[in-house]
Structures are given as structure tokens and as C-alpha cells.
Image 1 (cartoon, rainbow, N blue to C red):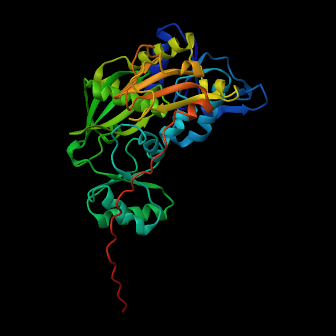
Image 2 (cartoon, one colour; image 1 turned 60 degrees about the vertical axis):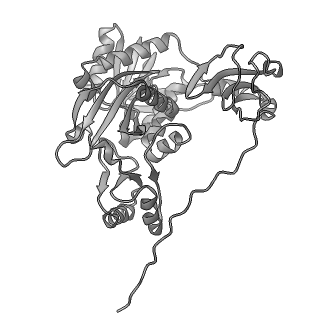
Length: 397
């Protein structure tokens, strides 16, 4: 395999370890600066140039795109995708993970724990937003901060208002997030490769610092995650569209809460804490996928007019309840069930003798017009109660 590692720092620990692991397995490795590419766009001929020469022929790339070059870096990754070069993480997945608000919005649709979070722009909306997430103390985050930079703990509402006003005046977008006191300055980093957590560690903040990031001096220790935490980490990564990810979670009495999903997770801290060859696990996964690549069905299926992929939820009054997949009649209507979601489990290519139950969700491919007949009517969502704004007294003098 000829592997490209997209990195601006060939001497960085993570880049070096990935290269070492690939070379040790007999692969050819090229470390390429993503900013040195030129993107050539023409019908049926997507190409890349590297330092004004045709880019090397690669079987796969591992993107290590820094936050400061996300836009151009993801454009390069996207071009590799169009050239049918396997990318360990897609451009869409990287973009999703880089914006904290976008990533939480995506995760919020699913049954995955996340901290209560608000995003506001108007000054008069700040106080109600703080109250809705539980009041002070409160966490304030820059949307695109990394390694703990741009994460502030405000002990009081007045301090929170002042910080937010200052950041907004500097044209910074900020999130207001519930402070989970029971986490006690600790979080969990799960390193996900494909559908497996290959390593995990607990990070603990030191001294008066509440941020547990390794770059902030956090202490690390190896951790054996429970099935619940492993499943949450893998699901979060997959929902974000990432195959290689570092998923940060808080440990709470109600279960894991996902703080962030990182598309370029560092290897130094987790390999040092766990003594696991995480870099090797990444290389092995990429090598397997190059030999047996998955197809992007979204691009392939849209060329068939009237056909597509859709999810069919089965409410309590569905006509399909109590029937087996074989007897449901869906196949005769040109609808194929690709996956059945039930009680937090995803069952791929379910057996035809499986009986359909209330609240199942069927991921199907087939005629879109036919599938519409099985969709339940949308109910109006219940609106959250608004927090009454306090009276503001003004004085003149």
C-alpha cells in the first residue's frame, strides 16, 4: 500500500508514529503538507498537483488536518475522495467535528448523552440561556477551540455575561454549556477506529485547572471502558461520519455525555497511558479498507430515478406490527430493508423471519413514492417553557 499522511508537521509525535507503524508493516509512506496541493477541477477528471507536479499515486490517505487550515485541508481530502482514493476520514466528517455547535446539533437528533448547550447572539438572550442550562457555574466555549483553548469556567452569572459580551464584541462565536460538577475535572478519551474502541484513558485536571486536556497538564491513566461507553463512543464517531476519532466523554450518574468528537486525535497521550499500539491499529484498518473498500451509496443511488434510501419508523399503530419481514410485503413493493434499529441496537441485513415491533426503525432502499405510504404523520413538537426574563430597572442621574 502507498499511503499518504496529510500533515504540516512531519516531526510531530502522531505523524511519526503513523509513519513508523506503516513502514513496519511494509507499506510505502509519504508525508504531504496539505497546503502544498493545488486542486484541479474538470468534468470526469478530478486531479491534484503537489508542489506544481502531478500528485503521487496513493492507495489511501490519513488526514491530519490542523484547525487553522480546515477549509483548504478538507478541500484536498474531498478531492482525494473524488479520485477514489480511500480517506481514513472524509472531508464531511472532519468539517462536522471542527464546529462544536454543528457537531452537537448532529448528535442531538440521536439517543446520545450530551451536555445542555445554548448558542445565542443577542445580548438580551444571554441570561435566559444561562438559566436554561442550569445557571452558574457555566462553561463558555469558542466554537473552534482545540486542546482546551477557548474553554472558560464562569463561576457567576455576572462573570459569564461579561465574558460572553467581551468575546462577542471580538466577533467570536461562543457556546454556553452546562457545567457538570460531578465529573470533578475528569473526562474520558476513547480512541475509535472503525467500529471499535482500540484504547481509552481517563484524563484528570491538576491543581486549580478544570480542563483535563493533556496539553493543559492533565494526568492520564489507562481505562477499560464499559460496553455502554464503548457503544456511545463508536456511535458518536459514526454519526459524525468519522472512522478514526477521539471521542471525549464525561462520566455522569446518568451515563456518558459526549463533549466532543475529534477528527485528528493525538496519539502521544493515549499511547503513553495505555501502552497500546494505536498507530498500528489505524494503519491496519486503513490497509483492510483499501483491500475491501466500502461504496458511498448516496452518490451511487441518486442516479436511479425515483429510488433512494429512507428510514421508516414504526409507530404503535403501524400496519406492519406483528408481521415478519417476509410477510410484511415490503419486498413485493420494491423495498429492501438494509438495517433494523431496535432498543439501541442496529441489526444489519435482518433475517426475513424477524417479527417487526413497535418503535422499530427500518433503514430501507427502494421506491421513494412507495415508502411515503408507510411514513407516520408528523406530530407537532412540544415547546419548551421559556424562562421569564427579570425586570430591569434603569436610573438616570
